Image (cartoon, rainbow, N blue to C red; front, side, top):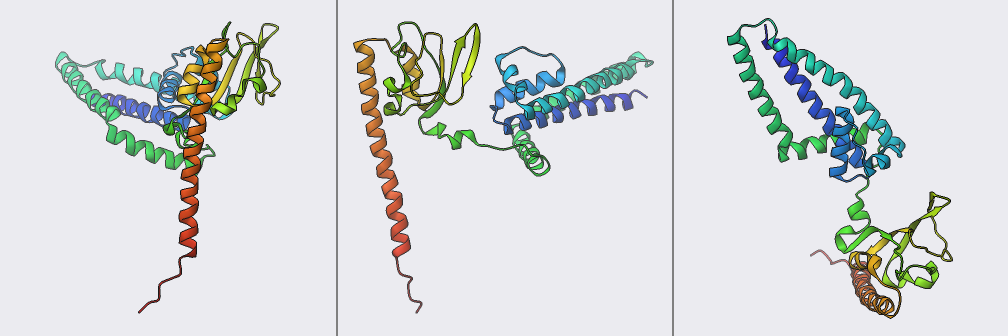
Length: 275
């Protein structure tokens, strides 16, 4: 009699694994990284509710908020059912039956653990889930790594303006960050004790210590930019970064000209006569 509750418990665990995987893929499709999406999906499903900076980022997005709400709802029902069936597995059984049930429980959980950790299963299941979500939902899928060229030496970074920094007290126009290949996407400023988000900052915006810039550009420039000091050393770093960017742009123009040349050659090549 204890086998049916045991099987029910293992099915509930399998259901939980699949639901968390669906939530992970869905959150990934909204732009979250895989690690952050997996953590938030597991947290929402289990009801633990870890407070992290990513949590605020997740719930501020309406699509992600709906995903988290569904995970919390399914998690509350799934965990309760799992505990109930687990208790029924051992209640009213003899010691021998309890030992066998415990053995089968350990084997079943081991198989489910291997299922959840298998990279082959992960790739296949994630692909199937993504195709299903793309077909039946309106979740947008963006490959941000390819879209922003993050694998080509570019990145997005938050740059903090420190006291005594080369950035402090200057406008975006004066900094000429675009000459270094850096595009300022947004600026967080503190005003009256509150943080104000400027999604399209003006070139005449003057930066102060404590401001945070959201920048896109070469990874080496963005990593060194927060540490650049005010004065001659900072100006020299700026000049060196501009020189590197000039070389980078020259190489990119050469690649562009090669592509244009290939297309023009292919379009002007006369078709070969068939013999």
